[in-house]
Amino acid sequence: GPLKPILKPFLRYLYFTSKMSLSSQSESDDDIPLSKLHRPEISDSKGKKNKSTVEPDSVGSTTSSSVKIKIAKNGNKRNGGSTQVTKRSSKKRVKVESMDDDDDDDYKPKKKVKKSKPSSSSSKKKKVPVKKEKVAKSAPVKNRELKKLDKAELLSHAMQSFLWWDAPEPPKGSQWVTMEHAGVSFTEPYVPHGVKMKYNGQEVDLSSVEEEAATFFAGMDPDGMHLGNSKTRPIFIKNFFGDFKKVLDKKHGIKSFEKCDFEAIRRHLEEQKIIKKAITDEQRKMNKAERNETMFKFGYAIVDGHLEKVGNYNMEPPGTFRGRGEHPKMGKLKQRVIPEQVFINLSECSRIPPCSVPGHAWGALRHDPQVQWLAQWKENINNQPKYMQLAAQSSFKGKSDRSKYNKAALLCENIDKIRASYKKKLKAKSVEKRQLATAMWVIDRLALRVGGEKDTEEEADTVGCCSLRVEHLHF
Image: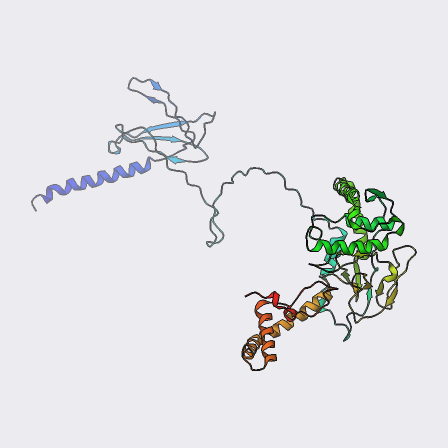
């Protein structure tokens, strides 16, 4: 209370003093360009001028033009002796304020802030600059060329484009409507080599047909599955020598096989094998070109307007019959098939293929769409017909397989009923029903073929479910 009249003027004095100090300080501020800042010339107490320059900072750069610097001292005591340094420039400006004499003379400019351009829409995000990394230069990539297909590959693609399951079916009972092909390719005629066989230590002059038969036997491996087996060797030699004597001229007087020596011919054949393996690449290319020429001529047929591949277009060459297993006719001579023995099957409107053997003609022409074969002939060993047919990937084979698989699908739906039926019949009173049930069990569980009876003197003794004998079973 009693101090209020004394303190009131003093507080008012402090208020006005601080207010005037702030106003004078704000009026003395000015812009100074930081990039070209130099220390001013300041006179010391003795009246001498000290010149000092300030190194340009990392942001700006120095210039050769002179810069005017003004030094203004404010003599107002309330201002605290502040000094103002100004540098004029048309470019960037930074505010710098000198502190009291007791403070440091270093300037602390404000950081530069880049003015961003106003975006057209606030929804767009600012693009952040990304440093491009240096990528090592790789070798130039060559344009890959498409693989050039040869003629055989082009024909294969053409055949694969035919969808036989979508094609219209031929008339009922017929396998095709139109069929055209080039016939059969026959083997080259035999060329005599002139190497002689020996009989009882003496060389024998053989004709071309006799030499060919002797060469067939000499080409057999003495340690192979036929001559090297003690069971099959006697059968093979007996059958061969029986046919060989039919070919030989009686003047040779060859009556015993044990006195025949085919070793010279066998050595000649081994030498020819070595020579064939040592042929040059050019000769291999020539041989391949010859085989391809034969394939392009005889290896394809046109059936119902689309291309099909032929399976066995090369006629079987002559030689010694080998058969399967212990065949009773192994060793007999297979004769060379001539065109007169071959029947050709094609459509009536098709072109008749010319015979490839000069001076010969086809045995007969047939136009039977109910069969699938293209050519037919009979071989002399079993006197059975043989056929030239389409390849395994043909539409005929595909239709046959589809029919088998459809039947197997029907069997799958009834297999449980069939198994229950034959298991029940295994205990039937009738012997015939028990035999039938046993045969069904063997086929189902052991996966044996049905089999059938055959003449073991004419064919190999192979058995199935219906031709099993006691010696075939072991318990």
